Image (tube, rainbow, N blue to C red; front, side, top):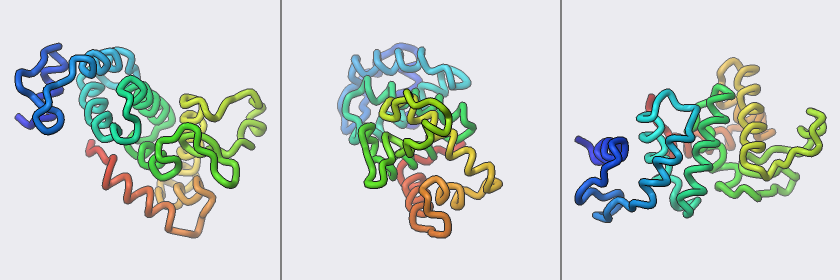
Length: 192
């Protein structure tokens, strides 16, 4: 049985695998296991608990270098999964967009004024008549960003490169879409 499958299996049963390691022969941290179990129980956008455990463990491991705090990382991943699924997007694609847009910095501010994790332009708040929305708030920023990206994907009839270019405001250039797709396949892609 592959190591990641074994880890998830043991976590699902609430067991600490005997000499099991996540990284280089380090035993599974009981605090991480408890946090993951809590995250799974709060992850309402997954088909079932097993899917939640597999995805959260996999993505948490990949995301560790960008968001070191386990609790914060699992909360972030639950939000990404929920908002991307609500918008009809693949969560791993959204992680790639975030990676390129803000390098997972929720306080990111671009030179043109885009804010937050998905670099949403503040004019959208006025367009929606919601000036009180806080684009630094993770859930709010993810909801805006995922909705905008899905809209562009729909108007481009599924053409991801064109949708990504629209999202970035660089329609006609391949630089941004190529970078997002590269990051997606290199760091975040999950085969379904």
